[in-house]
Length: 62
Image (tube, rainbow, N blue to C red):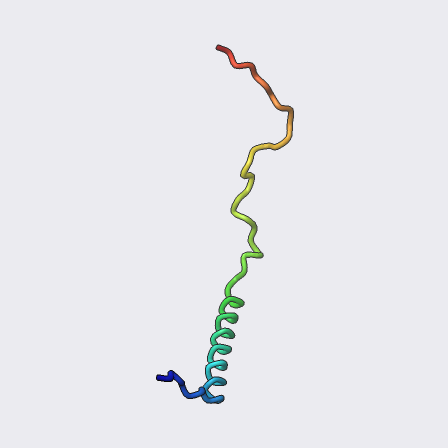
């Protein structure tokens, strides 16, 4: 009851590595081909009101 599998051939292992390398190169080429968002600014402008200025405290009436 030994579950021994034959050792994979060196050529088959190189073929698998080559396929993975090619797929990675295709993936990296696609990401480089897309336009980066570096040329445009952020969509968020003036998200908050003025941060500076004198604070105003009012007494609660009632």
